[in-house]
Amino acid sequence: MLETIHPDSKKMTRLLNSESLVHLSTEVSIPNYDRQHIKHGIVHIGVGGFHRAHQALYTDDLFQNHGITSWGICGVGLLPQDKQMEKALRKQDFLYTLIERHYDQEKARVIGSLIDYLYAPENPGAVLEKMVSEDTKIVSLTITEGGYCYNEGTGEFDSSHPYVKHDLENPQHPIGVFGFLVEALHQRCKKGVPPFTILSCDNLQSNGDLTKKMVISFAQLRDCSLSQWISKQVTFPNCMVDRITPMTTDEDKSVVLEKWGIQDEWPVIAESFNQWVIEDRFCNGRPPWDLVGVQMTGDVLPYEKMKIRLLNASHSAATYLAYLDGYDYFYKAISDPLYREYLGRMMNEEITPLLPAVPGIDLTEYKKTLLERFGNPSVKDHLNRICMDGSSKMPKFILPSIQEHLQQGNTPRLLSLAVAGWFRFLSAENEKGETIPINDPMAEILVEKAKAGKEHPSSLLGITEIFGELLPNSQSFVDSLTRDLESLYQKGARATLQEALNQ
Ligand code: CS2
Image 1 (cartoon, rainbow, N blue to C red):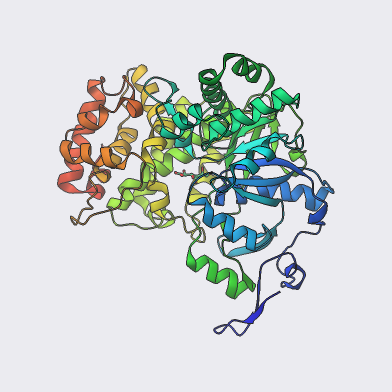
Image 2: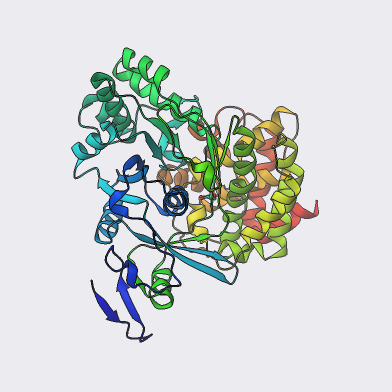
């Protein structure tokens, strides 16, 4: 175990690992269970901050407070950038620090539920072996909204992705998520091992149903009888997940070191709020997550719709305008009365009327809590994170509400402005004429079309895999977008927002 005196704080700091745990400050909560005895049960693909602040925490709660010893998690990384996570976690015996913040209160806890991590590009065989093992009863996913190869225009699986093509040509040597899932299920079927549940934890409406459709479509391209077996035997519960988890910064690592005395290469910082509502359909058993605050239900759709259309949509609606307006963090924008009014009114006037009743939830209270959560200054959620991947977030968070309004004969003013803000942002120039980074797998084409179209939205709207057919063909929506874009280019985000609210 390495101990060092940190030069600035003169405080004893320790490298996080199994041995150093007991020497940490007593103010840090640490696993009270023997991690050697935790049996593996879950493979999780896509271990980022969110998984580590959410599912891994709920699972840790089970080990910590209920004496459960099965359901340990093996993380899997498929992407080149996951190598760094593997290195950080392996060095720390897969332990990491979770800092939960609510305004001026902060709690530190070391999470022990992740018991292994495999980096697939270096060892695809080990990943398959783990997924085929009888011990694996659930494979859960956080692969981002864009990771599902779903084409918004056709509503179908998009098999043109290079990794999908690769995995269809080399089924036994997969590199992508569908390749791994389907090959592992194929081997289980051949060996007579019962299948695992596939649990999507991404922010997609009907995330389980959509994952099922994508997995089955991929399997059909491989082998019809396999796809039938999966369709009959595997369950894909829908679930709603919620916890705002900013990206970890170097400053966060310094706080963990200086305030809590833990040298952790990749801690996670999250808000104190945490929610998970899951449809209780697991084909091969599940952890008793209901013992630790997870809501198991028969119908998760109202919860998902509420969360995605209010929380995620508010993020996407305000982020581009606030970025253009010169803000850096979401909490700062939201303490500006202009943005507060924008989101408050958008949620009340344009989104709430589209939502079904949500059992046990008072929507007025829910929206109040959302604004409080957004304004939490200790959760430094950078706009760069929220601005990322608009091409997959907008069609999930904002566009469905606009579509519903158009179908009812209305043009929603404030939601349309959110799209205009995104289009203006995609010109890759801020209001001072400086270049801004566009972080999106479709960045090249988006920027090209935004620059070519400027005030005229039709080139961007012509991307059917994002916008489908209804929106580009709605004259009132196109007019509203054009008017807002003109104003955004000529007067800027602030004045445009102000005018929209005054109308
Ligand atoms: C955010 C989400 O990425 C985004 O745009 O809206 O990551 C959001 O913070 C989480 O879904 C909160 O549960």
